[in-house]
Length: 207
Image (tube, rainbow, N blue to C red; front, side, top):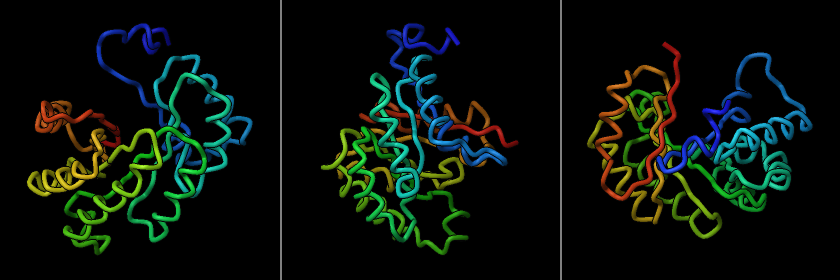
């Protein structure tokens, strides 16, 4: 665990974001009590992570608020599913929890948009509207173009340009299906490096 402490990363410009209390809670047969969630958060703080993603906006607000009060050094975040019909109300609820970060997720993969029946132009408009709405209410607003490794490059460029107009500077690039190689992730990150973005990656090992 020493390799994951803040001291081990000093000067590298790298931040650790732990999603155990959000992504991990989606695993089969995993259901933590509120006391267990708080215990995990304390252990993550002890390990030196920079951000704890406490769950989904609209679903885990109470837990996120409790974690925000319990830990001191890590920032606490909630993930907002931008395609949820109640996303705007959930955004308001997340703001009331006092979390530091809201991460707004909108699909960007071509096939995923098609399956959802979400027009690409509508997806871009949705991303721009939600990020603009979130900016006044949170210390940090992040954007996640879900299934980015399966998106058309030109579409991804256009989506991030729309989000940038709202003032968002952090983009979390996900390989949502775990289909990309390390080289492909490096290439995708390199596409947006040097353009003023604070870049994150979220990788899966599904395959």
